[in-house]
Image (cartoon, rainbow, N blue to C red):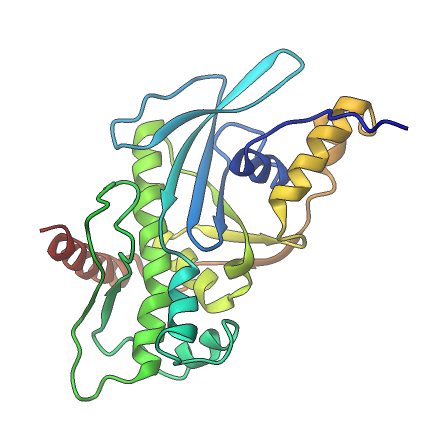
Length: 261
């Protein structure tokens, strides 16, 4: 028998739907080789003043939902580089343990612009930098700084989106392989000063595609029926003071300015 194609979606739109970010103001970040952030802006197409992409999230039952999208070129790829390029770690998963073996980065700031910088800079000829190296610098400091850089880059995109949309998101839903890293997710919550929710199912893209197809053929009656299936596996709550984080963000932005020069 023939199998119908009943739902078609871009990968990030599918991930947004798989995360059940179906209401205005809901946001997800997919931590893969890069980071891909989308914010549901409801029935309004928000024109970005911060170089974000205005896109269609989906169309269901004749209603169009819009979104803002921003991409970080190098996310989990920096951990792959630590493993394969520098051989600091044997597995990507061991980056968390190594990062937690030191209290901080020892003053190291890592801007992983291996292939340029994505949103909100869109500077393809920018190149990476590890700033602040001393004789006391260890592979643990560099690894911790690399993971923090993923959180800082995502922060810059999310803050730009919130400025465009005119509101602050209540929480961030996360998925993708690097979302399994507890240190990174806690850092993301601290930097954003926002709760980070990691679902039971991290493969949100394929899940979202299945949801679209299921709705089309009547396997699920409506979105509300699917919403009840989304479950939190772990929620990360900010633990650092906004004042302490602000100093770290200022140092990050200074390093980015050097890369962009």
